[in-house]
Image (cartoon, rainbow, N blue to C red):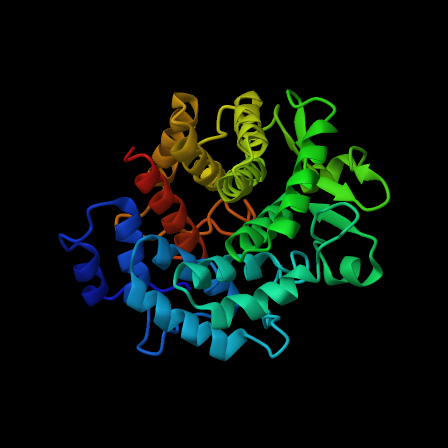
Length: 344
């Protein structure tokens, strides 16, 4: 999406109903929707998969239902897979979008959408390690990489969908990955390989694909946060305290990172994980992290409610901030979760 909202859109976004940053972003998203649930200017699944969940978190039930209907009709295949045509990263993170749509569908009780996708997603689970293969090639060969982001989002989908057998196995994968870290004060290695375990050796010019370096800025900080969001969910579903404690360890490790760790676009998931963790722990350290990320996301939001791709996927991609449904949907979800959790 690259066009500015119309005057009518701006009028809606500036209405008295905008009592929070999350709601302001959600109203901007709703203003981009057609009656059939599609988004103006959308080009692929990438424009929808987070928006469904963002609208659900902020309580826009009718809009969520319309968009889920559109997504199911346009992208859902008979085998539960999703059509990723036109989405440039789809094959590299093969079931990542699936997890978000499952979560949105479960939030609305749309089991007709959630369960077919969940059955497909479960075929990517590596029963030996407990993680989820990142690519279809890895799944088909039974020998490939698993990384935190994909595995954690798939794990969340399994918790929400009642597949606690897979979710617990994913928890064990997360614990093993954490325990094998050489030195969290220097880096978080977030890729696990079927044969070799935690990947700690990689080309220096590709380090960002394998680790978060605590000595450098603008890292993939979301790896800490989405791990925490999953682990807290697993604790809530099972009552097993060890997962909540591990969630706090991932969050605590963010304090080793560079000074921008809570204010980059990549920080949003840290706020998500910290908010869900604080909701159950009441620990002021978790709240402090959630509030710091909240402040960072607010600083990045446009006056009209949207967020752009600037400094998100590629720091050199654009120098001209334009509205993004993908990014706005995600940050609406994170801020919605933070705002609700911090009401305690």
